[in-house]
Length: 243
Image (tube, one colour):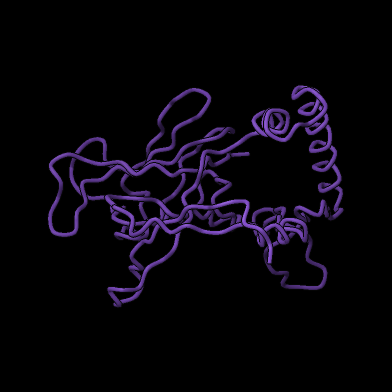
């Protein structure tokens, strides 16, 4: 039996898609997002790496740049920790049809590899109980690319799932907001760009965002029995990217 080396914390969320009051979803508590410099610094301070963090960061970035180049040339990647490869979504309506970016979607899919899968034997999950949920965003799906919790396609639909996220009330702060991580600018959207507005699901039209990374916020006065006097904001815990 493998030794447990890691613990991932999780909480229970009421499953609003079923009528069973004792049906809960288990959601991992997301720790903060680490970038390449963070991981290289940890490799030196915790893991005892025998090269300085900046040197390791430089080498990792060279590897990632080359990996991206090879992916764009149609190669698949298998690092052991993850696999990656190009994928085309959509259908062709004749044997002679060519790729059309308006009809078809090109993306890269990443999956856990054998080495990472093996590490699951060393990981346990600690459930901290039922989450105290005021409002929370659990998943974001870019409808154009089918990307989950990753990409944003301006002027196309975005599906947001969660709890108590229905846009309700007349406060000026209510709505869906995209916060540019470089400039701090908060970009909202027109009320007419809300396609579906439910307590557990929003579908909106993404504003014409520029390239960059964004935080997603949903601000609303919605409550189950009545409107709140003041709006509350649910902030998604992962950054989203416009390429």
